[in-house]
Image (cartoon, rainbow, N blue to C red; front, top):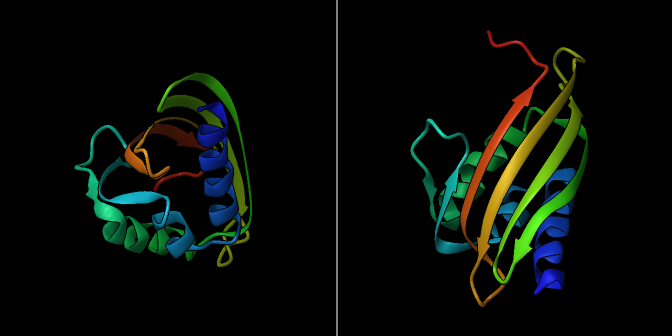
Length: 124
């Protein structure tokens, strides 16, 4: 099971690194729930996840992603993830440090994803 979990996180990093909303959305089931923050309603389904993620990735360049597994059991995992990228319009270098909780379906796609993160970029 650990290989499936790590394969999923690896694929997430590849999709993010390529800035592929389609690749990212393909990691989720058609009815998956993705909580971008604990205070927003979830994105529901791979189609919405693809669309919202592609929008976010449009303003990111030179993306680097890494993670460390903190907990894994059967079809669930918690990781600490790190992402760095540049904003093409300002040249700002952004760093994000986050925690992700993910549950996998037998298909190897995520049914639930929750994340908590913070970055060094100031809100406008």
